[in-house]
Image 1 (tube, rainbow over the protein chains, first blue to last red):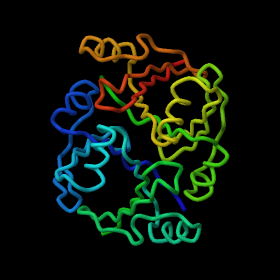
Image 2 (cartoon, chains in turn brown, purple):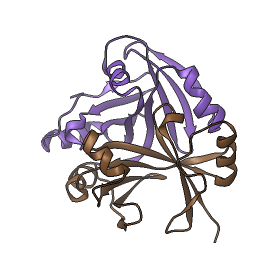
Image 3 (cartoon, one colour):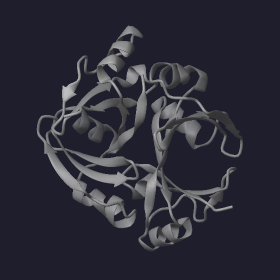
Length: 136
Length: 136
C-alpha cells in the first residue's frame, strides 16, 4: 500500500461554532467550509493546515459512532485519514492480512473521493480512514 | 498565530515493534528512525506520511502522561502537533486568551526544535503540541 499523505485528522466536537473559538480564532486556522453530511449524521468544518485538513466533526443525530464517541469521551481526536494511491488494492491487501474493515468496499464521498474505515481493533486502537481521490 | 502544517500525529502504543506490523508492514509507511527520549519517558518511531510524520510513542517508564494514557485507553490517537512560525508569540497569545498551557515556556527538543503543549481542557479535548524549528 502506498500512503501519499495525511488527508485529515478528525476531531469530534459538541458544537462546531464553539470549537471555532479555539481552532480558528485562537490557533489561527482558516475555516474554508462547513458541510452537512446527513448520510453520516454529522456536519464537518474544514480547516486546512499545510497539506492536510483539520476536520471538526459535530454529530447531528443521537445515534451513530460519532455521537457515541462524544458521549463517552466528550470529544477529542477521533480518526486519522490517510490518502492512498489505490484504495481497492489497499483494502484487498488489508483483508488478506486479516484486518477488521468497517467498510468492505469503498464508499463514495461527495467530492469524487472514495473512502473506507479500518476498525481500531486492527490498528492498535486508532480509527483509520483510507481516502482516494478519483480522477474525474 | 500562524500554523504552517501538521508536524505530526502522535499515537500511543504498548510496543513499537508490535505496532510496526500495522503502520509499516500493512499500511506501507516507511520507518525512518526510532529515538529514545528518556527525558519524557518514551521512545518514538517516526514514519513520514507526505509532509507530516506519524509518530508511534511507547512509554518506557511506569509513570508519566503517556503511560497513564496507555493504561486508561490501551493506546490510540494521543496528540496532534502543529508547526507554528513563532512559538513565543503563539504562547503569549494563548496565555492572554486564558488557555491552560502545560508548558508556559517552550522546551528545547533534540533537533533544534522548541515545543510546548496546550492542555486538552482548553482545546475541546485535544492534546495539542506547538512546534517551531529554529533557524540554526
